[in-house]
Image (cartoon, rainbow, N blue to C red; front, side):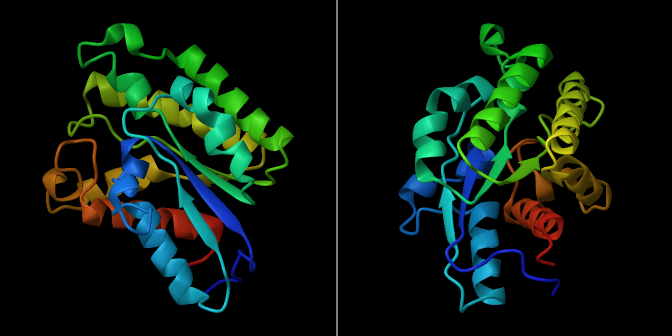
Amino acid sequence: MKRFPFKNGDRIVFQGDSITDSGWRNDQHKLGDGYVAIIKGFLGTMAPDRKIEVINRGISGDRSVDLLLRWEKDVLDLKPTHLSVMIGVNDIWRRFDGCVEKAIALPDYKTNYRRLIEDALDSGIKHLILMTPTTVNADPQDESNVMCAEYAAEVEAFAKEFDAILVPARDRMWKAVEGGPSVDFWLPDGVHPSIAGHCVLAEAWLEAVGVI
């Protein structure tokens, strides 16, 4: 184990769409059954003597603009020491699912994302963890995934600009897919990870923050 990056009393808030959500509101532990729960379990295993609070506030279907609308209540008011954000899939997907008027173009995505970051920093949140959006379709050459790569590149740029931790979730997911056994094993519908896919995301997150 590397030097454990979280101390007693730290609070980590996870924000995003359905990939983060993973049914947390119907879970007795309010974590869901995805990568957030896996991370919480691993942190508890690695440092059982430390009280590290993990809060999931992902909402299925959210776009960057939806995060802005609830940013104060679901992030700033919670006063996290660490904030993890994974958003962008729905910004793109709305262009392809018959709701094109709800799609968020790349320039607007960048504007929204910058405001999310700046509001978080202005509120006193010192540790940002930015996860790239993963995939919108099982075919890596699909137009939606080409767009997703562009959105992911903007997240990478923001991480560098604001000295945030970058979790290369998109790259790690595609490496898993390319390594087999099949895309359905990792992403049954091309978007939402299986439990194995969520393990890929959790591992990428834990590596990026320096736990493993």
